[in-house]
Length: 297
Image 1 (spheres, rainbow, N blue to C red):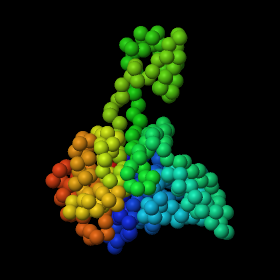
Image 2 (cartoon, rainbow, N blue to C red):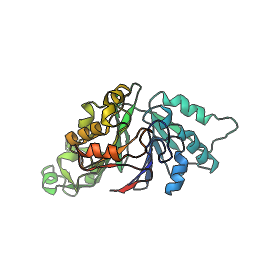
Image 3 (cartoon, rainbow, N blue to C red):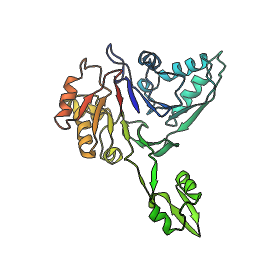
Image 4 (tube, one colour):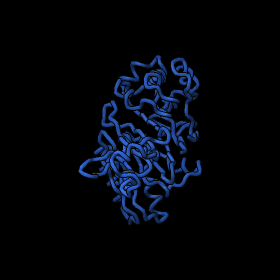
């Protein structure tokens, strides 16, 4: 599992930072969370394949989070992509995506499927789930919770009580999560245990702080959280639907996460040392992300 920060600036790019984009690579899955202007060039510099992206998640329709999508789509098409691309975003995102798809004098070689974000699990496959959570930013905006799926061990003593033993239905139980046998419904969770705790990554961008975030990101291995301003601008930050570094640290501490990574820094800060220091006063396991920071889990 590999996380790469492609842009850590809020609103507009700076000489040091591009606008928001985060790439996650996991078991052949290539996911992109937000896609600010210039994201495709950032990917090239980071050595990441644009063509391998299967799913793009756009948190909201502010320009610094979606303008790079047009370029990525055009590059995919120019290079002859044939596999479907899935784009997730608030319902308002669809009109922008349709505009990109209907660009004059461009014939698309691949399908682009739009998925409207709503509270709850929006992607569920064999390897992981992604849950969207509503944030508070003045316009529809979502955070994302990535959680891997870990293979389970069947408890033979519990299975034996149902008379299953080595029944081929055990394979179906693992795949579907439940089966009907001898007139009873057997749930996988009741006869198994995970081999290890699944990894959880929470991505919270563009929101003022509120209690609901804490429960959603609880026990994350990594919490990626916006920290647009320093503490002296707290009132202004909240007014515009953003957080301070200390806000992010308070959430991390209450949620019991393992590590906090700050991102989405206002362009007023050439260096992020001050923001990192403020957060560490509350939550020590904090780092301020830089463009091209890569973390392996």
